[in-house]
Amino acid sequence: MNTLKYQSQAVAKPYFIFAMILFVGQILFGLIMGLQYVVGDFLGGIIPFNVARMVHTNLLIVWLLFGFMGAAYYLVPEEAETELYSPKLAIILFWVFAAAGVLTILGYLLVPYSTLADITFNELWPTMGREFLEQPTITKFGIVIVCLGFLFNLGMTILKGRKTAINMVMMTGLIGLAVFFLFAFYNPTNLALDKYFWWFVVHLWVEGVWELIMGAILAYVLIKVTGVDREVIEKWLYVIIAMALISGILGTGHHFYWLMTPEYWQWVGSIFSALEPLPFFAMVLYAFNMVNRRRREHPNKAATLWALGTAVMAFLGAGVWGFLHTLSFVNYYTHGSQITAAHGHMAFYGAYAMIVMTIISYAMPKLRGIGEANCNKAQVVEMWGFWLMTVAMVFITLFLTGAGILQVWLQRLPESGEALSFMATQDKLAIFYWLREISGVIFLLGLISYITSFFITEKKAQA
Image (cartoon, rainbow, N blue to C red; front, side, top):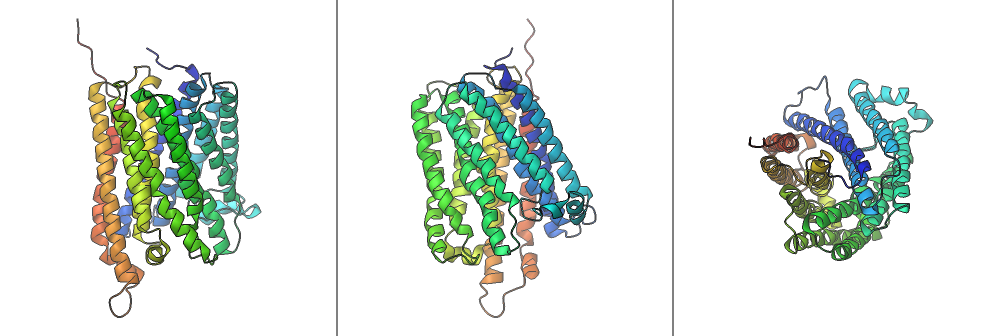
């Protein structure tokens, strides 16, 4: 039984599967890092901490990009009411991107980073060595080529089909993703200037154009699972996206506080960053409002749960935890502390990991040809995965927040005498790191439950 509306939507399946494989890898390296915080020589000779961290963060970015690409290939043809322009191009780009990603990660693990820079001719166009953008320059060029092919494929599909708000917002976000990645090729020797433009990639991705992609996917899934009029959902989408863009773009200023930038950035950054939780709060109201007004009981209860969970966790992680340390006079003490890590973990999980798992939860039964939803038993296992991952992430965030508050108190706000050194402070935080590690193991069990659910089938009774 094939339930795909357009056959070319099937190209999303390998993207989703590979995204989940990389996600498992990301969590495994996160657990290795977490243990190295408290057992400093754990795998130190094989996977040093700096390598584990590089792999952990790079896998995060790459698996989310695979998830976004799969989501676009699935929803754009259905929204445009036409087949994908070139399914063959989509598959070719999948293998190019997958090969580049795997080779890059293997390079991190098997070759000293300085040697990797030498053998990839980094001296011809130096771009390596920056957090999240550690990829060799040749890999970065590969990413640009994949993005251009991807945008061409989607653009041609939309041009020949129906133009909907969801497709327009999705394409705007994806074009923005590609454009802002180009700043990865600009690597000035001045460190302050380097960091200034580095945020043009990192912030304007995760607090700018990625939010458009997230909003488009969420709107698409809500239309499908609730049956609410498209016009109503699209109006909400436009309002949320406008708020996200205005606050997100000017909110970049909260990264410019301590980079020798003009003092007005402390005002601009503080004010507009304080507004950033608003679009996420609107997203919570929007998601629950749409589900409450639903005109149909969709059989895929798990996808509905993921959609609602995404809105709540994105608000908590990106909104509330972002606001906790975004005002300049607070950030003066907290920047670079474990409070930043707490915000980063919950924000990435709530806003982006969860929206990718939402679209996979909705689309995978159709991609597998089994109907609109997995069987009830599979959905129960999937929902166990949801709760294990989500609750574990809440505790990871709380433990890191506790560690961050104590870190600031001991290292930057001593009651008397000299502040403790960085490493002396880290020793005092060990209990939080152990608790974070335990929560990480539970998170991995939740992810395994989520993936396992897609392999569960109920046997039909014999007549």
